[in-house]
Length: 307
Image (cartoon, rainbow, N blue to C red; front, side, top):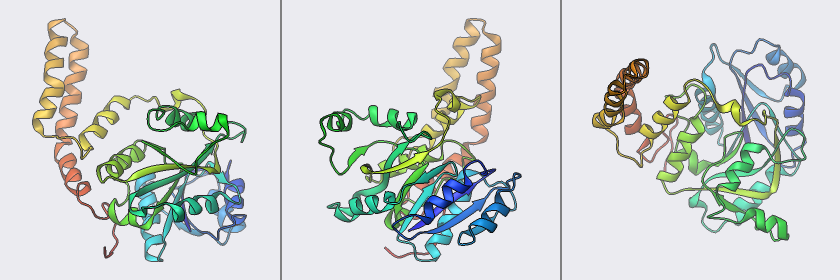
């Protein structure tokens, strides 16, 4: 099991994160890609966890590119399983073992895109609030909460999304889906990746017997930022299951600009026009990215493999 962790000022969690890997019942090889920490993270890991394969990035690559560097290294070392884990996270001794038990028992392994454990919050007493929301919105395809209440939990459940704080990716996922799209620097990389998982008819499954911790901020507002609408729009443009061309930009923006101008919403119309010009400037990059991610191969990774 190769565990890949991107760090950036990780000192609040470093001891618990890396100590938990030492206690794993499944032997792990940990690769860390540091994005330029300034709080002593690099020195701490090198001194206290010398078994970690530490890579210092000369610049902040962002979440996706840094993970891709770790994935490429793990692949070159012959990894069969790639576990992507946030720096503010830790595991229990049997977390990986329980995940692998589900993988090996699953009837059609080619269907598996991402395997996820149950994400607990930092208190270790409640579900991570975001993970709980992902489960809740999938009630139409599974009844995990009812089964938990009745004591009849199954070995796994299918869901449509889980964030990349804890992802187990089999080697076939890396070879067929690839790595993270470098279009995004930070935020939304995992959403775009899941779009490709769905496009290539692979599944995301949650394994209730495996539990882990993600000590993230338990606040839905943490995902609200100034470019949220822009990022969501670009996710849609990059979805290989949806059509996209220059006319899509016109349809998205021009009617709205006309409507705002008609209502004398001058400032709003100007902002929409600026966003339209921004997206037009990214059009070629989006189209090039779509051409890459629609191919069933190791997109955005520099690896050589055979199907």
